[in-house]
Amino acid sequence: MKKKILLIIPAYNEEDNILKTYQDIIDYNKKNKTNYDCIVINDGSKDDTGKILDKYKIPHIDLIHNLGIGGAVQTGYKYAHLHNYDIAVQYDGDGQHDINYVKTIIEPLLDGKQDFVIGSRFVGNINTFQTTKLRKVGIRILSFFIKISCGFRLRDTTSGFRACNKKIIEEFAYEYPVEYPEPITTVELVKKNYKILEVGVNMKERLAGKSSIHTWKDVYYMINVCLSILIVGMRRYK
Image (tube, rainbow, N blue to C red; front, side, top):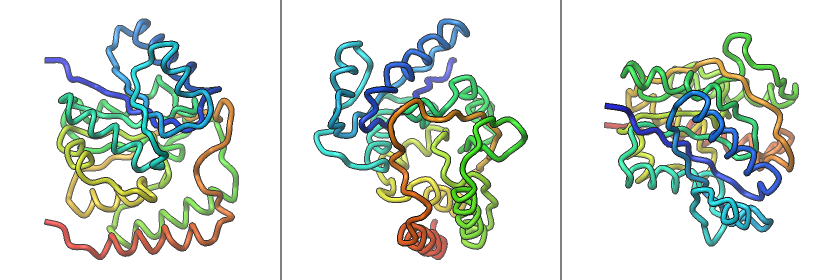
């Protein structure tokens, strides 16, 4: 039986990117005879993102208020759980994620060897887009805190290009962190003894607009996320 695969695409003010992001998925499906479904979570966008989604009949859910990345992604997981998907893939609406690497991310899930897979810019020599030195320093700091919190070495701590199996879909549908979801969920899943794998993927520079991720110059953000990782790492999970 074929697995049902869903791409969850959170989008906030992505009027310049969302149509091409969706079209890339459609073109890939046609070329490779795949059947990746997708759902765009329009996170209370103030630009014309919603109008574009309606005009081109792109599958989507409109959130009345901006919930942030955590709330938007959890909405996608709720949808995936409700519609009985076997695998869910987080896929950015800004054009940074390469549709050709969805196959790489879901393969360890299809054969049942892993529960959760993270697409990484820092595994192998695949990625062509180089992030800034300052952001790399921030990622290394988060990697250190994740390591001491749960013993798992994660190179790309802020990657939003991730996939999970049905069991984790259900977990995320009911509970998902509002803030710092990428590093926090990684620590939680390791503590719960899920099998996690980091694989090399290519990522691209966003097509247009500004990233919603906090700048690494924001010391307050870094302190808070590091403390959150440590707190989650100290929790006991069944």
